[in-house]
Length: 269
Image (cartoon, rainbow, N blue to C red; front, side):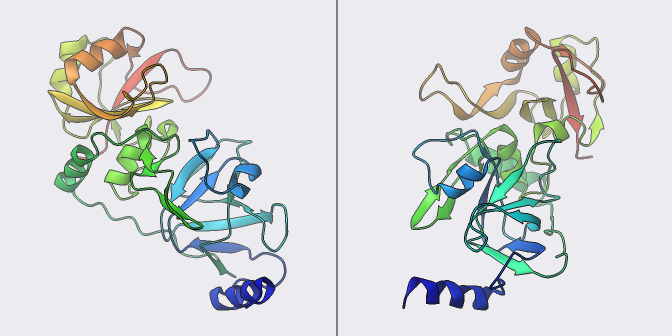
């Protein structure tokens, strides 16, 4: 079967239009989503790239904004409620693995797996490598390659553990749930207020509380090869390190450039 015939048959079977692009689409499988058109076109990289924004879970609904590159086969510029972006940031995804839709599809279902299941998933992720934009430790299938983008970044660790229930970006996690009042407190006073799955967060990173003795996170440590990725640390040790560079705040500033602060958010009662 020729390439053109296979392409046409694929469009007919998936509901993909023969010409142009549909206004909406749904991910049929886990798909990497990028911030540049070039990254969405290049396939599987040999190393992690900063252009990887996140991995869309099956069922993720997209609004298709335009075709990027070739109108029939090139990547698509999209938007999705699963990954709100700041002004000026664009999202691109390969159309392979997408199901075209003529009308807005329902949002991807979000079901909280339960506190114990989340804690178990977090602990089982220990040792997983850090991958910028990664939120599936086993990666995704890209073409003939299985396991592309395998690894987790800091908010991706939580996103995977909750099955995509929590926000994907730290900028959203700094406002997620309710604030734990920690302004003006010292390290031990803050430790005394922590509960399992509380988030120690700032724009750019999140640390997850396992218990008052231990926290877990995925860190990118460029100057320590082999030392990055998901690891657990004594809570007092890690909080002391954070407080050497940042001050505790009750809430994250809503506007303007934030000072070096951190907040604690409680998203489970």
